[in-house]
Image 1 (cartoon, rainbow, N blue to C red):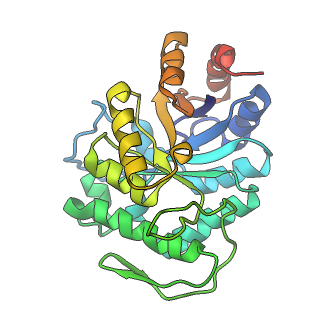
Image 2: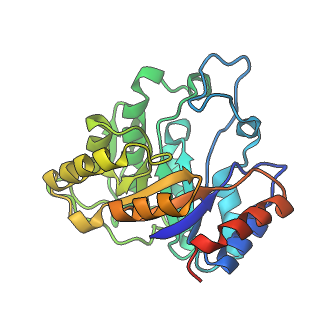
Length: 287
């Protein structure tokens, strides 16, 4: 089981260069960064975790930060947890992701989600009740651009002509019965367990990125059943649990359930504070 790390990276925290270097030096598997473009004030949408962390309004662009991390590392995965796909132009986002994947040697994992902040999404023109459909269409546009030959896509929330576009993500296309190959980097969808989410995972993703791991014992068999019922290969499903406060018992439990990757939560602090936290996590990381 891989052990990676995340934090709310801002203009006041450790830099992506220094964090990526420390993670790679210490044997961590990857660096994942979340995304908020802005936090509208006043805000009516409640934060799912209780009190809104002030760092949400100061987050760096994950793709720019991960590009810096890519330049100073050669092994660790570089991921989002999560990217708010509905809030981007999909043609431009496809280019950013493919470029990062190309320059990093194929190290990108794209964690995506539907978002929780209605006001933020609506400022981007996202119709909140239909945001899941918007994400699905945005991803389909990007898949068309990442395909091995020019491919058009058109639907309600996204369209692109058959186009020449490079670079391409490096990951080998994955087979999907009756739907054609799945192009692009490994893509994991975040969200609460349920038939709707699992249907989207089996349709256009490579796995699941739940927060914290609550209810995994019941949810994972349902996801695996939906996955194989959709004709996807059982060994191709990937599960990465994010925002984990680790302890030996919890990590052993995740490993027993067949979780592929655990992304531990670091404090949103400066270099000294974050490195002290990494020192404490060293016992969980294989040398």
